[in-house]
Image (cartoon, rainbow, N blue to C red; front, side, top):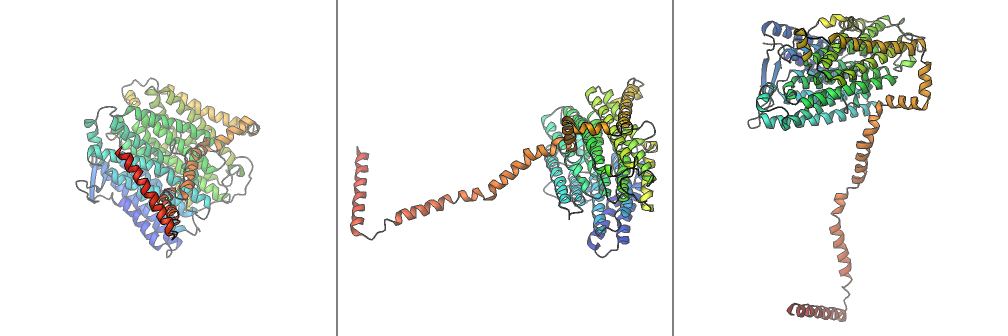
Length: 624
């Protein structure tokens, strides 16, 4: 029997134990259950992956039916798993990186009053994400999709005693639900057309049933993209991601590196035959939105002062690169960057957690400084992780995946998207250098204490190694699962003449960003920037970028204020009150006619005579 089902069963068991016994478990026991369940899940993934790779040829799909979930007429979706090269890659990332994050969290959350509650949510988060990527049908995928949504709400609002944290959790839940509604519409459309939600059946039959740019397929892929935008924080459903930093730092690492924000990328890659039938949606709604998102996120990151919010916007930018890759048909390149990003983004977030603990929970980078001497391991982790984020050539893992995406964009002839990606690389180098220099160099502004513990240094060390060029040696087994990209086909045929040109342009932009950042922060010591921010134009630009280019304010005007107005309008329930017109008229009639009840015989006779006269007149008029 395959060990694959155990990959999500172990974290699920961990969640149940911690959820029902959290008040009875010691912190050590809760940590053992939380981290241990993830270790077992990662071990099962390793064994299952090795067995699959040695027993099945490239491009094969292994089906593992467990039971029939439910049956309504002919619709009987199974609780079944599907395992191929894409699922293997995603499962390895989720369990491997997820285990390291759990291990670090055992050190980071030590002494927290809700220690067991925290790990119960974390275990359920991983179990939901594993169910999402292993599901053989879209309904089961949707169950995992909603599972990661509720877990993100619970973890972002973990410190719920602070009202702002609760509001951030509600915002994340609400914004991502918008995308979920789009995805649900997409599933209804697919079921109407195919009569099933089985993923393999849909992607096999779609090219046989539909022509290019079929209206139904265009609408369906639009709905799927809407769902992906919500989960992966792409414009315009991105506003929740920066506020999600309200949760504990290991939560941020798990959301950004191994679980939730990668779900949208996985969905589009998994359903790629549908998107190949709608090239316009793929290019503009996926690639174009990704390119725009990575530029917007770069500008926002430049103005942030919270170390975690800088990394949040960097995630939004890197997911934008993945969408860009998907949009130009670089399916394998998108998943490869998803994997490399998981390594260096987990490293950066866990390192930022170490920094925050070292400086007594301070998150403002301008209140730090000089930390490279106090926490040297974290400094080197940030240096390598930041280098991978900026794609330092040849020595960091980010270079190999990001440059591959830019080359594919260049090779397919989408020059506008290519230069948007290049400009994003320039912005990334700029804000990465800014963050590292301010936090680790200069004078110490907040006293920092040294850090120790195997749960602290072991995950960081492993992720540090994976964030170097060593991580690029890991090749996802995607051959036969995802189509070959145009740029790769050019390389195989020996016609990739423009590859070095694209690489030199991208590396030049990255180098220019580092040079400008060094001039501004090292040579000038930020004086020019300070003067610029005090000017009218500079202050306005800084305020605009700091507040996410005003998207929250815009949505407040377009959606929130009208909704509140309608709420106030209907607070008194005018619909219900409108029905009160009838009893009101009856009451008025009663009052009018009750006054005729005088008891006067003469009055009654006069009114009777008047009535008879009126009737006679009406009869005479009718006869005539």
